[in-house]
Length: 126
Image (cartoon, rainbow, N blue to C red; front, side, top):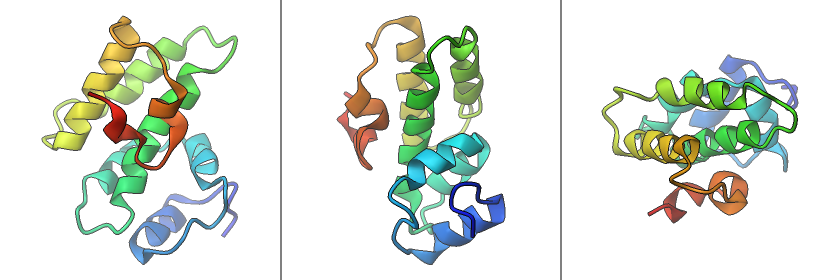
């Protein structure tokens, strides 16, 4: 597997393997794929051993996109990602879409630790 450019099938295989991160920057490499639909799918599958990691990836991809310097459409991109979670009847995804909405609307300030910090960063939100 090319860890810097994994295929969707390679990511899915790893997700169900229960194995360690293949690389120290695995979340960074996966954020480049921008596969939000896949991250939502895996984050909502309670049979997926890496479910919490993919929930982390949803927050991480918002954090990396929101902080892109000199990108004028970053709010549109973040909104596009958030919209993929609307209508999904899963508590973690509903919470994620609310947190993203609050970030976009200014109700919540960007905080690195919440959006890109640790594997369980999503649980730091109130």
